[in-house]
Amino acid sequence: MKKFKLLGIGLASALVLAACGASAGEEATSLNSGSADKTVTIAASPDGYPQHYQEGDELKGFSVEVAEAVAEEAGYEIEWALSDWSGVVAALQAGKADTAVNFANTPERRESYVYTDNYFYASTGIAVASDDTETNTLEDLAGESVNAVVGSNYAEVLKEYDTEDQIGLEFVESMAVAVANIQSGKVKGYVNGYEELTAQIKNRDLDLRMIDETFGEKPVGFPFKDTEENQQIIADFNAALQTLSEDGTLAEISNEYFGVDITQSREAE
Image (tube, rainbow, N blue to C red; front, side, top):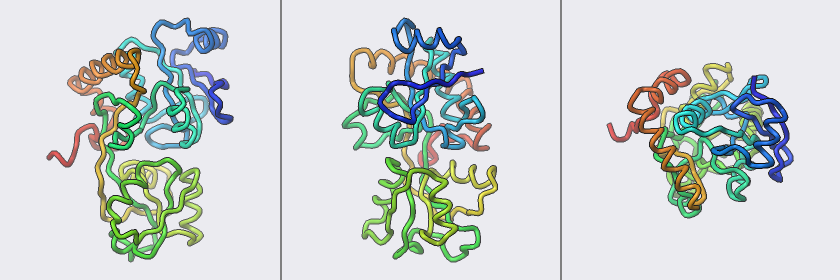
């Protein structure tokens, strides 16, 4: 059983999850004294189904399983630092977490981080109310507003495609708030990862549907600050990612959560 405890990273809501299943005393040692030879702290939000989500005392999801498989292959232990998404971004920026999951590789982010090789490709999609039969394209959203989670790359992708600023963007702290806003009519939709939204709607019986248009595929890897120590971790992670890609592990994990292989670019097909 994985154990939760507070992690002193300056984020009130942050928690740590020791991936190695150590006792509470052992966890405190690895957290505070740095006694573990090869430990990496990975930031994630616990409400990002099916990428990273908390179920009881366990952290699950596609990106979680990929990170754990990569760390095991590379010989690292993981300490999971959990908070809302804005806290994930803050922890990474402040160096309180070594890396994060589900963090798209964009030109803007590459100004601050060095990425590992990609482990999946994220398309952008928009969910609307299930009884909204009129909204199927970005053009249909002209003059309307949609929600995006604070710090989400998907909001930036939408801006790239909404070149005339016809779609209003309103930021919220979580998907739950966005769903409530759609149902109340406050906003028309919610922009996020297409595959993630599709899985959430299907498996959590949400009263939403996806519009027909998808756009803006982005590669996703593990981001790190550019330090000598991190360069070694990146090299180790890249070697592990190559092994796990070649032996089919990444594709298997993807199919478990999404029913398709998102570890390969669809735009390259």
